[in-house]
Image (cartoon, rainbow, N blue to C red; front, side, top):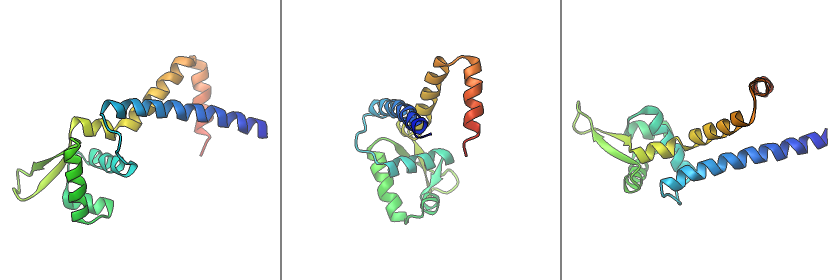
Amino acid sequence: MKEKREHLYVIFDNLLRIKSECSTEVFSGCQLSDISVKQIEYLKIIDEHGKVTFSGLARITSNSKPTITEMVNKFVKMDCVYRERSPDDGRMFYIRLTEKGQTIARAEEKALMQLIEKMTDSLDEREMDVLISILRKVR
């Protein structure tokens, strides 16, 4: 059993390496080297909501409005987000992702899809069915 676990370790380590390489390709295309995991998570949250107010993002992330304002200012400088004035209330602004922000927010999803594509290119239909059946059992 130990040998099989070691074999699985090697296999999954390789899969994670491939996924990481795909993520790196996406991020390097955005010319970002110093973005943090936390910042990526915030971009994902903004992406999930489409547009969100400063107060809304502060509530969702359990941060203060000044912290959110500082973060958004950094994102604006990085060309990841922009502010959009509310058509209903001119005092309120929405935080929206730029194309670059969307690319970063969706990088992990894209990398995972690239990994799945590599897997489907390597397996025939029957093997894919077996793999799906086995992976469904993992909880």
